[in-house]
Length: 270
Image 1 (cartoon, rainbow, N blue to C red):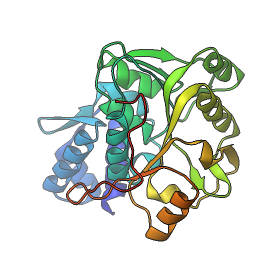
Image 2: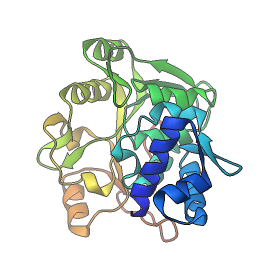
Image 3: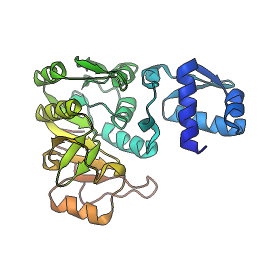
Image 4: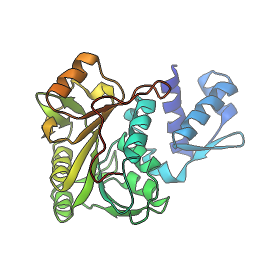
């Protein structure tokens, strides 16, 4: 069993039992207790569980997400870097639309509790994370998507249409120069588009695996995005997006990270 599968198994067991023992998991998976402890430490750093003496328990702020889906650990470190960078763009006194998703979950986890900051989200799990750090949250109502715990539908879009945000932070299932931003779900695509139209600026968070993929539901052209944050991009693709006027921030490995010519500070975003 590879490491990512092992960690998914650990999260599944925590979700089922609320607590696990290191030695029990080691026997179950046929690995050493040291290997399980390393896995638990990594999952704790990601905010999913809390390490305890001899094992791990549910991290309360994220227990709502542990009805686990396989996307959570895919490209987790890349998503964390993207989320951390996006969280650093937000300043005091702003209103932020935060879309559902595994990358935006890192924004919810890492966003500083600025004075007078308001986050509007359709994600119950994001709301739980934000409120655990005393950030003011407005939760959008609507039709619940049970597997991922966010709201969609006409009620959700209607609520967003009554608000206005300084910044919209959303993820995407696919990013393509010709087709634009896309999602797997039509209702989520419509909600993201409404958030974009009711915001001064739109920031899209997408790891490298999303580029070139075309999901069935179109959100908007990439030309309507103010900043696109990703973790890596081939030079040819970078130049193509740049030539099309798309503003990119490519986050390389933090030990070698440099500013790219495409980066600029968003007006009104600290």
